[in-house]
Image: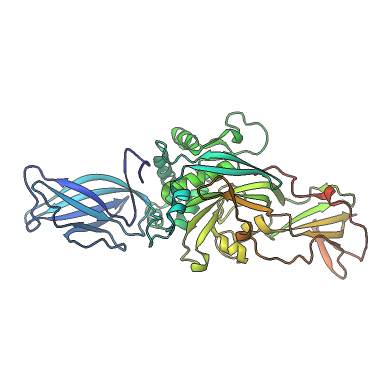
Length: 469
């Protein structure tokens, strides 16, 4: 936690920290006086007896101890440790001194508790320190953009050590709809990194709440900043705080994702920014991208589905005890507001393992994310209101999936971690349905056997028709 804040004590859950208590003009006698610490989180609190012990802390409960040799003439050093499943938040710490006649209470101060990727029992534990260095501690990243044939990278400063960034991330949690609706419930659920990532994901965009960024993909950027001009998260977070949590204008996918990555790293959850080239947007949930063309190759605007030349999201590392060990590891979290998930504009966390294995019912939003990287593109040829030809492209979507390599500026190719083997029997051929009814634009038409020479696929290329990310 070094460097995250000069104004606050910042500690990791499950890791002991020390505080020294000074007694004015006297010493502490453990035989005559008992010490209690009380940790407070909003209206929630827990009293912790301070024991004389030489044993290490327990990671399952709050624990406070004075080691032999830590009692001095006018001071005593207390070791305090939180449970590994503690909530991420700012805690208030109280001290109670009790003897046979009275009890005195003191406000010690506050401390910030974060996730602990170094601790094996923490759900965000990462076994290799080099990965923690890259995905938690590093404030430098590369964002991949462009097309799969012309990949460009741009540097990004995550800025988690900039003054005020930690405080902004904690404020984000405090003004979330979940916290405003039920603070006690929200505090208790903040122990779960999956819950945290979902709350933060929704708060990075401003569509439902007092979120950080307002998106804009076309038109004028007057009254704000063109998304291509941002180079780091700290400036965005500072503007959001200074404007009393009004949205910062403007963001697009890589800006949303990079700010999310900053917040998650600050909270102690390993995170990385991932770019999907030729990313599909499945608007109707059928895990397909449907496109309509005339027989001369002219694209018709009859579908809300689209394919972006690139799209950027975040992967967060965590265990998923709600799903089972198979789904542990990297989880997709996408803060760009596209479709609602359980009524709010957020997406994920969804296990990458679920995408590769095609467990499309896995929470959260597995089918939508699967379509983004592996949907078939169904291209329908229309004549006189009827579908007369059909082509399925199984290769267009998710051409490459990149993230920055560990300890290197080279891209790491993640494509195979998302995409399993798929049948190509329908791909790259036009077929005409026989003895079959196809639905088209609200009406059902009978189709007949028809053979024709396919027109050039260059005229109906779907993979570069939108620059949006």
